[in-house]
Image (cartoon, rainbow over all chains, first blue to last red):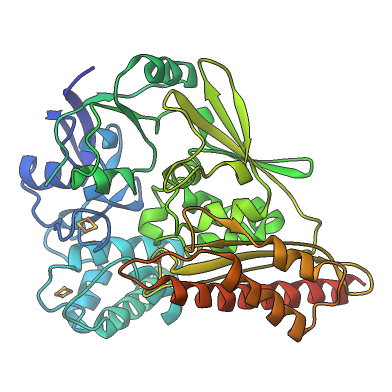
Length: 163
Length: 294
Ligand code: FES
Ligand code: FES
């Protein structure tokens, strides 16, 4: 069968149709074909979490998926989070709580925490650390990330309550 | 750093998959991709054909059938972890799943993929071995049922022919209120176990061991049942000293593995400690159930 295939998916809400080599990973598709270089590649074997994106609302290592496997899926990357330059409460909390230093791990961390906050709106610190175990950060020592996640959870809950 | 060229196949039925397996040369099944994809990215494996079985709907699902749990091989580890049925009737599996990688990898990783890959330090094969699970294989030459005890044929070598597909797993359930425990030692949370033990324990009305199953991972080419320790415990009151003595047999009855993470002697010691911890957890749970219902 094919070594190239037609791929149809939605990325950050935009419908995309491309013919791609079947061996292309989802990460390389996002970065090289769509120029969405916010998704980073650290290890390319599933360990570091830098490439983590949301596929149909669930986190996945984009280095461990073929692009053609995302056929029909809705993919969200860090580029799809802020709307018209307005940061999400999670991103805003990263700014306020020193949730990043070099920023290499951040897009993957944000994907993980987005799923966490949707799954557990009121996470404990232990929950946050458990979920973060799948994302390696070499700069922050994690404390700023944990603080940002907890603050964002609170902000989102209060925002929802205030509506 | 990406895989060399291959042909990609995306069957929608089991029959189509079996046809592809029987006719294609050098084909690999792609399940959740959490082990095969890293190996392909690093070119440790370079299959000519990749058969992606993620779109076969009837390979995924969790169903309670009388006194067994039937699980489709393509059921995601995360779906198993979140399943109320698994939490209620197979709590050992639930507890072990929390140690399998991370949420991000469990979202994709499947139970069948873990069994077919058969990493010597994987958690799920040990759980299924303790549970005396049966693996259901489909093939064009006929279907087979393989007992978990017969599954590992050597280092990362499951009892699965190149033209067969692991389709489902059935897990015989233990009586409601049984004790269970899973303990493992890893360098970092979510890593493969350096040693880990899955324990199941049922006590009789006198608080004596009516049934016990112990399986260890990370210490041999596949999961190992600790039959000597099980025999020591059976019919006796599981007091601390007996548990400690039974757990100690783990250190002599498993071969251990030598690798960058540790020596075999160290792993054997770990196996004994993990066995003790798993047994203590199982005993506490079995006793609290007795107190609640007895
Ligand atoms: S690049 Fe995908 S997990 Fe490291
Ligand atoms: S901010 Fe630099 S790796 Fe996390």
